Length: 104
Image (cartoon, rainbow, N blue to C red):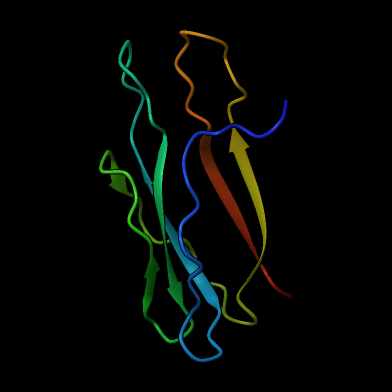
């Protein structure tokens, strides 16, 4: 399956100075049962200088607790949990979770 046209790209954001990403929070909406599910609606990062880095996202759901922080070199890797396209008239959630991995 190719690219879907849903959504839009945010602007590029960088940690101030030469900062790196150290930890994150996901904003997720829980399963709505028979309602429309949105899953991950935003992500917020904390930079090595302590400042948050966040783009406007969806209004549904709440932020999780902050992840464990990466202290040596920041975040270097990512793993995503995605639901594949479910077909016409079926509720799709798309991105459901992420894992980030610290640099050695």
